[in-house]
Length: 241
Image 1 (cartoon, rainbow, N blue to C red):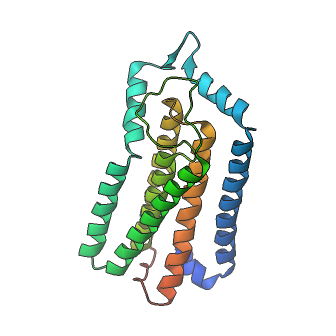
Image 2 (image 1 turned 60 degrees about the horizontal axis):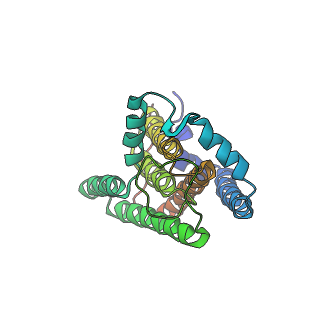
Image 3 (image 1 turned 135 degrees about the vertical axis):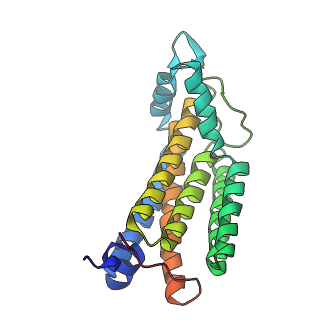
């Protein structure tokens, strides 16, 4: 029988400190990637790339018509709703309730603070960069904030990936851990893709949202492990096949 702890990320972090360095490198890489991309966006160097992708998703004869059937456009609206503030708030509250009922109170508070601070970071970045929304094609969804980074994309990455990281810590079976993380990644990808398809964001807005959100989730994992070692949040469960 394989050692269960060998398949569990938290246990491996305790036994192999070099994994901390790998995760720290990923956080640093995400931060660097975000700021390099932001610099290119501010200087206007991504304009041709953004425009080419946005136009490729539209009917050349009618830019108000996204490619694909009407049901595809409707599905895109459904997907984009999964990154809305209302839905993500309800989902976070639901998971927080589950953690409270299962007596993981400190984990619950960590989760709420992690997602709340990630949301604040997204809002602050929008205010700082003040990038205009795409005016190349008509919008397929109502928008009222700045464009960079994509709020729906970043908030979905922050929420889904952070929720997945925290919930997978409490799940003893490796297959369930993988399933939770896979679902979170797929949902985050679909939300971001729908924003470009509906013409409400430039592709680089979405890439920035994915990068920042994923980096935030990994950072939350590192902080959670540090707090766990200090006994300030509940320990993760042992992994099992």
